Length: 90
Image (cartoon, rainbow, N blue to C red; front, top):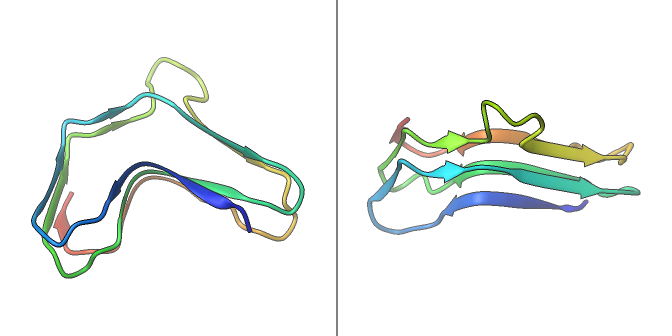
């Protein structure tokens, strides 16, 4: 497999407050049997409460501002504006 690109990777043992951020553009390109996933805001800590609010991921006016391309025939490529597997208000 390839890897991942994170606009904001929320790793904390304390209260998380992720608000009013702007991620204008992310491009992830890979070839061969590799994938590269894109996560605008990424959070997996399920033990800590978080607020993820009023964030802009990509552009409303610029085409392909969040762009992922992979030629991998066997590895999945993911694109998520906000990935949150924890307890949060989003």
